[in-house]
Length: 260
Image (cartoon, rainbow, N blue to C red; front, side):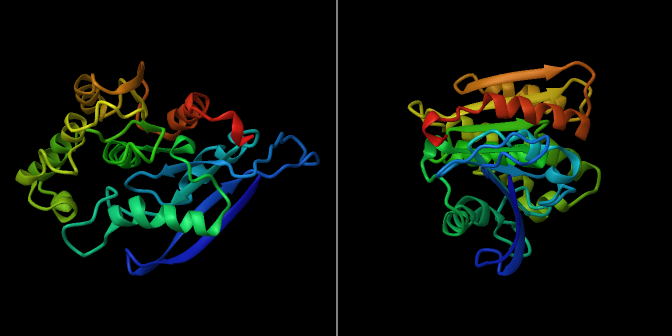
């Protein structure tokens, strides 16, 4: 595998930002590493959580080793505490960045597939929200989306934080009474999801996770989706769980044979 640590300027964010990218590299000499090559590998956008950055998947999991024998590029961008949203206060357009600008930049920098059938998105916690928001908003761009312990019922979570005296979610989404039914409400996006869309969804959460009830709310609302749901007894919101489950996600992804 090849690992690129990339700094670049974002017109959407109006700042320099970063991403890490894993690319397949054919090799027979790397000890302990079976690797493959692909002319134009599929792409997995792998999103971080609220307190993390673009480096976290490499630091807390063995993601590079897990994808070594797959025809798959992994793009891990930095999106700060944004909920992958064009923030109401501060002018940081993270939704525009992640949904529009970043795929174009990745295509311009790297020889990866631009076919929606070979494009996937996944994330943990806040990143699970971002992954499902991307796929529910643009099913024509993503063949599969996965959420690990995702913050999927944003209305409930934001209201709870507001009741606790925290205004961060209003800084992100604006007035919380306008959040339900908006483009930032995953439950509303399910209701508007096209019947003809072919995107597959994977959702998992531990039963001891503080977001477990919110995950149940999403699951129960998502009857129209092609959703694989898993819950795991006594698992909590931590990297031991996500390191295990990202391996399940990689096995579940509908990788196309022609990428090999």
